[in-house]
Length: 278
Image (cartoon, rainbow, N blue to C red; front, side, top):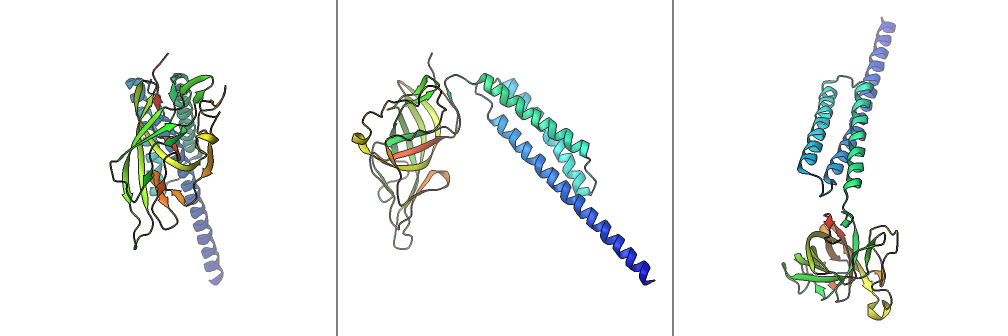
């Protein structure tokens, strides 16, 4: 009797182990598919401004169908049903093909003068910013430090004007000795045209000043250069300053944030920018 009980318990434990392993594998499979869905969603978001409304609608409808397929597999997993390898591989391949198709389409449609999301530019503050004196809705103006090229095509010349607004201010005090302020850039003037943008501060850099930048202003990234942030005429990050979420500039040494005129801010474009011109 004892032997039968022991064998039964062993069998029960083995079944439990196999069920747990199957559940763990199913969870991993679903997690991998969810990551692919997230990549597909980003591909839809990256669709070029030149894409038609019908193209975007088709892409969103196709993505919705793929999400429905994933939801069905989630339901199976919650019921304890096994997700077959064929089901998993079919959806995985469909998501991969969908994302690749959109990325290829976007690269073919991209406007030659489009500055893509994620591009970073260095801009010089025209007036100082201090969390002890700044107020919400104060306007902020800065100019680009160097030319921004795409290959040999000049997109944003040095001296182009970024304008933005102070969105939040916390002054240093006896109880909270950490000053902070947030700036969001919303317009860029290139030559004689003004464009709406979404620009977030990602770094604050110490300037070498006009003397240190002699010969650098107006020098482009060079033929074949990749679009991106260009570090020119700076000495690196400012000590005692930390950039937080949403572009918040935070003092780390128990004082107000102080960014004197001439400070270089690195700004990331969070929206695509299509420049006019030939």
